[in-house]
Length: 403
Image (cartoon, rainbow, N blue to C red):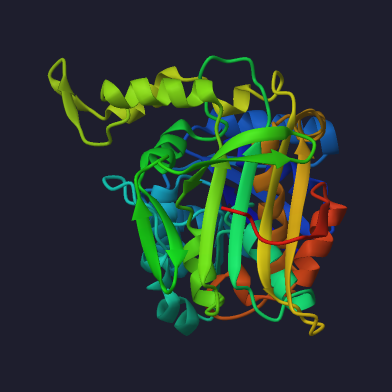
């Protein structure tokens, strides 16, 4: 049904391209580009071996708007799927506008010099995309992405209003490393060390990073410590669920991860400002990224499961009073690796990236302008989750979280 250009050859890019190739009736041509073309070639080789689909590859510096525009025009896709770094969102959006092509990503823009990711930079593109007759779909990963679709599915089928919402992200996988991140180390550590923010009574409330901890018993994983963090879907959910009184995001971390991260912070290795070393400027966090294990290398050794979902409380659609529902997906690291050669953290983002792209290419989700996941009918997206490796379940709870 359509041609795609995927930019980004990390674990998420690998999963997305594999899953696109498995749906050749929708993705008639797939091209993959990244700064390091050897990574693209490795993914293309795996895709060919697993599916028989040929994926052309290109080298591209996505910070270079002119070069990216030229590549888009050369490839001639119907959609550009941005799976590169969040720093590059705006330059790729500019290139899509220049080339007259639809745009999609999985994470919102974040400036390199400030660890603060917000939607306002991309929402500011609304008029330009609308006037060009183009669509930009933001945040089609798992969180953000599926977690927002989960909330809107509950609002459509279970709850008239959502009063409180808690998003719980648990990675129960074990990769055998003393310290490693399951996605891009630079982005992961910037995210974790930033101040926490949650939505309450019409405004964001800021608390110290990793300052609020609770334990929760996750199905098929067990009890885990989870920490309140800021995550970008809280911003869009607050916008599209105006009745929401409180929205929070929680992520699990093991004690060893917290211990290592604390030491790295204390010695300055998580800094994002430049320091002089041997007569040249370096960014400590970027150097740390270079010496940590590459997340895509962890797939073969990672065992265990992820469990990600929403707990929402509000007025029931059937008029039976206030109710609480828990909707979630559980994904097995080993199953994800067997299918695509990547662990479940990449899989749970790469599969929704494929589905979001399919929504656009099939014309299921349409519109001119910049859109978040909450603005579309959740049902077709939820149906594809069930069919393509991320089945979900929903249960009624006795009440909201007690904390």
